[in-house]
Length: 122
Image 1 (tube, helix red, strand yellow):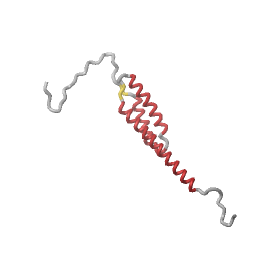
Image 2 (tube, one colour):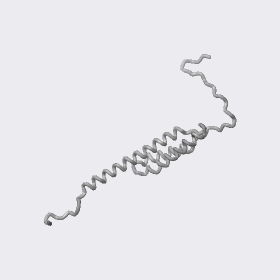
Image 3 (cartoon, one colour):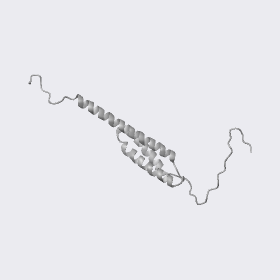
Image 4 (cartoon, rainbow, N blue to C red):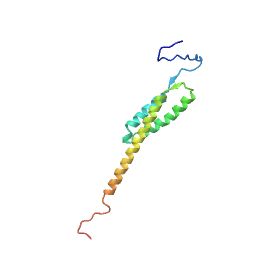
């Protein structure tokens, strides 16, 4: 059998067993992506903590279910993207909290200490 340049020979798949389930998309993978997106968008407002933690917990469950399904649950790409977005949201929350703490410490250091009496008081 000859093939045209640049083409690969087609490998034939063995026939599937009739009782094998059809591959199905994992609904948790899309939920992880949606929650990760919300976490990344609201991360600077410190509101991204809750969706990010929920997304990471769902990602763990989805990975366990995908492993147990033997490859019949799809959606690994959505799961990876959602996890990345959730970690990005948590990083943005950390940046926002550190920035607020630094601003608070600087303002506290600039505030006058004790009572401020007028210049004619001993």
